[in-house]
Length: 116
Length: 120
Image 1: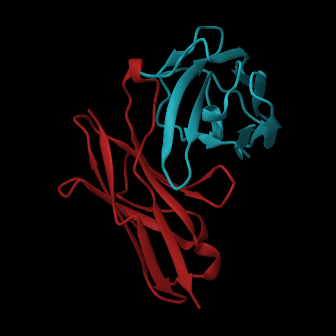
Image 2: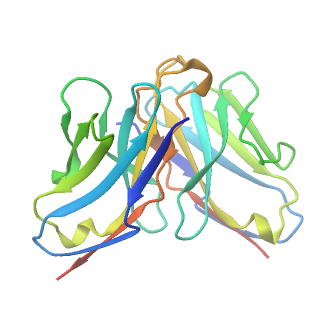
């Protein structure tokens, strides 16, 4: 069975500071990993994804994440936070198994606040 | 690219009414679409997986007769909440995965903007 754990339901940083949102996964097969962002009353927007290949993946809006198999982690980072980064962030995992249809398993979400 | 349109964005209706929500992939074809429900300050809960031309697969605990899903084409899936009651009030979100094969699960899901359903 797969699962995703996001450490910290709420993270607060100052504008310009490093953003680090933690995600650990559990999967018995090679995972596909995703980070999504959700603004209030909106759907989810894909930030970045890892499927195969390079373990450091870059996404939109200056975000990046590194897949670390040994640590079963896929933490999201951004060097310098911007006020517009304030939102809810979800880490998700899926895998290539036919009868799962590519279902996403989501973490609980982390609300990011950015202080001026 | 990869735009998913969900309509309507907000619905307020009386108890007992049936409500239909549409999910369209505008610039790609999607064999598989997903329907989620989200409660305030919580994560997304998968309700069902919708495959074009076949019956939807519902998650455990989701009432099939309550939440009717139709995926008649590669660009459209609908969710109908039948005889809606106040406890059905929620934020419903659809997503679509590009591709014409259910094997392509490394493709990311693209989400609609959600539908806020309020039952009085």
